[in-house]
Amino acid sequence: MSAYQTLGQRGEVEFVDRKSRFLGHARPVSTEEEALAFLDEMRRAYRDASHNCYAYTLGKNMGVMRYSDDGEPGGTAGLPMMEVIKQRKVCDCAVVVTRYFGGVLLGAGGLVRAYSHTTALALTAARIVTMEESEQWLCEVPYTLWDPVQHLLRGLPVQLLHTEFTAAVAFTLLVRKTDSPRVTEELQLLTNGRVEMLLEETSFRAWEAEEQNA
Image (tube, rainbow, N blue to C red):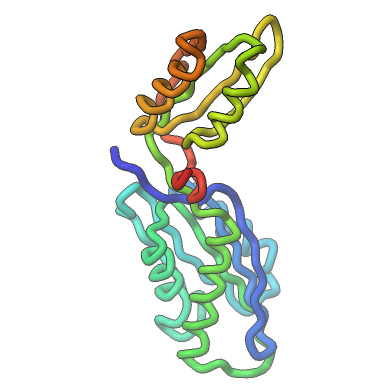
């Protein structure tokens, strides 16, 4: 399976356009039940709102796409929200945009822009991450090598998940599978083969944009 993008957490934003308040909420979901439960949660929380419009995708290839205008003029809310999600290439995610009408009509174009903009803000707030096949390594080095190892790790495309100081320094690294040969080789070279490395697991894990460019 190839890498894919999803959300790293829940996100929440507010956008005001000509006195109408738009509240955007986004979160990762893996099933339709989760998406519908999220929608129900938002409807209960904002039951006094004018509209609770939504869009969600499921599947790594966005095989499931659902959206609703929730009473707004057709094509002015749910579909524009879905288009933002598709443009950002975010799968397994749900977005709900709640509108409190402010007394000023926005027109069809204004609604499209407002719902699209709020969706984009909500996705950003929820942190778009890339899920890549990754390896988790348990490593150990003598104390005398820990400072140079730390310096090396800061320049490598890795995530340092955990460090423990006992008889030696034990640390857990997350490495994209494609980067694993380079990382293990550089650690072995730096420590002259004195680093001990044990592969604990392989799974799809989240990577931030800056980590991908390390």
